[in-house]
Amino acid sequence: IDNNINKNSLSPAREGEVFEIFSKDTASLDEIAGALHCERKILENMLPDFFQECRIKKKNHQTVQECKDHFFNWARARLERERNNGKPQENKPGGSRQGNQRGRRTPVKPNCGLIED
Image (cartoon, rainbow, N blue to C red):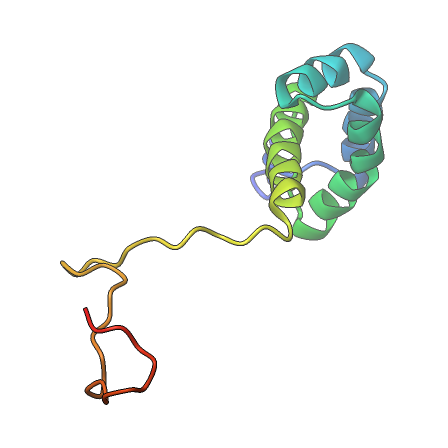
């Protein structure tokens, strides 16, 4: 056995086989679509982006199941990001006892239009 071989990395051809097998597994895609409450077609459109990102970030999958699990988590995060895109985040109170309240910097002048507390 050659000790220089990295057991955690696959050749690009083998990784391509894993991607091809996974992309043809319609039962798994249907299962993931059901869990993520979306249509299978949306997931099928995401597959090329997922495969490209895996290649760029060198995320190798030893089995189709590892690829499926990674895609599920990746797709869930991407769908959540798309659903929340454009929606403002809620203001969360800070750690101080006053939260988001702020005091006045200057005293209120008479007849300035502000109502005194």
